[in-house]
Structure formats: C-alpha cells, structure tokens
Amino acid sequence: MVSPAAPASRTLPADQLVAFLRALSDEIVAARQANDADFDPAPYLAQAAPLFGALHSVNRNSLLFAKQCRAKTQDARLDMDAAHLRLQVSPHLELRRRGLADNKSMLQNLLFERNHLEREIRSCEEYSSEYQNLPLHSLEELQELANAPEPPAGLKLPLPEGDTEESAHELMLTRLAFELAERKRFEEERKTLGMQKAKLVKENEVKKARLEDLEKQLTEFVEKARGIQAKMNEEPATA
Image 1 (cartoon, rainbow, N blue to C red):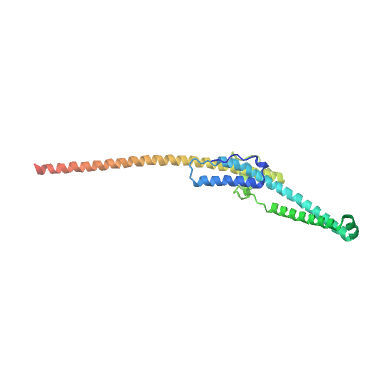
Image 2 (cartoon, rainbow, N blue to C red):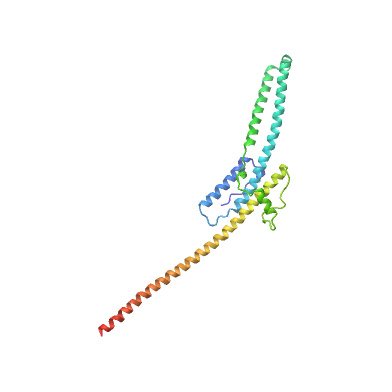
C-alpha cells in the first residue's frame, strides 16, 4: 500500500523528511518480505526522489547557516575581547557605566551564545544525508553515457558543468534522477521477465499433467494387453 502523499517536502524540517523516507523504506521492506507479486515500488521511488532533493537542500542550507554562524561567532569573540580589553584598561569607568553585574551577565551571555553556535556548527559539519550512501553511477560513467551515440533516455542532457556549489548541486540532482530512471527501467524488466517465467511455468505444468495422463493411459493399456495375452495363452490348453 502506498503511503499518503507527503506535504510540500521543501517546507519540512530534516527530521520529518527522514521520518517520511524511513516510513517509505519500511513499507517497501514489508512488501518485499510478503512476496507480493503485485508490488510496484515505482510510486514509493517517485515519492522518495523529492524528499531526497529536499533533504539535500536542507543540508546545503545548514552548511550555509554554519558559515554564517562562524562569522557571528567571530564577531561575538571580537566583541568579547573588546569588552575584556575595556575592563582591563579602564575597569573603574566601565564598572561605573554599566555595573559589575551587567558586565558579568553580558560575558555569560556571550559565552553561552558562542558555545551554542559551536555546537550548531559541529552538528552541521557532522550531518550525513542518506543519499550519500546510494550506489550512484560515477562521474566518469555518467560522462561516457552522455557522450554515447544513443544516451540513455533517463539521463538529462547536457550535464551541468562548473566548479560552483550550485552546479555541483544540479549535477547531484541529475545523478539522482538518472538513478531513479534506471531503477524504474530495471523494475519494468524484472516484471516482464517475471511474467515470462510465470507463463513458462504454467506451460510446463500443463505439459507435465498431459504426460502424466498419457503415462497413466499407457499403463492401463499395458495391463489390458497382458490380460488379453494371458487369455489367449489359456485357450489352446482348454481345447
């Protein structure tokens, strides 16, 4: 059974995107284990593709946010150093202007903010998306397929080029889309071969049943022939 369509994936946080992908994965595994002959993974893959794209977008935005956090952390560190310097150069004037309690509170807030930002930066740097573990075609294979006389139908051409972050993002989306198209093609081939196999099995069963019936008839014929032969052998002795 296909999961209900998820809300707009680009509006969801990362944990909800992962939850949707995990739910889709659990349904596919359950259907595989049930050996459902009518199971079709195409709808699941169609739902998973935008979720992977959205998750990649969240990761990219997180990395961008991490850079901004680094800049804010640096600014906060400079402000904190300046505050320390002002306290060292003119402690009495600073204490009179703000008060000792206010200075301590300001420094504590800065330290708390710095620790918070550093934790966020580490979390963003250590984040690992599910799509990074997918067995995708290498860039060399993708380039060879793109330059082939008849490129695969699922490969979007021309391939994105350039060293910018945006071009790398577009290239990854192209690789993911091609992988999805290839898996759909393989699934269709698997279905076709499965139907052919089922047809051959059915034909073999019919032929096997006919052979068994013929063998049964032949056995009956041999038994009857033996009975007739026995009677024919008894008639001269009686005469």
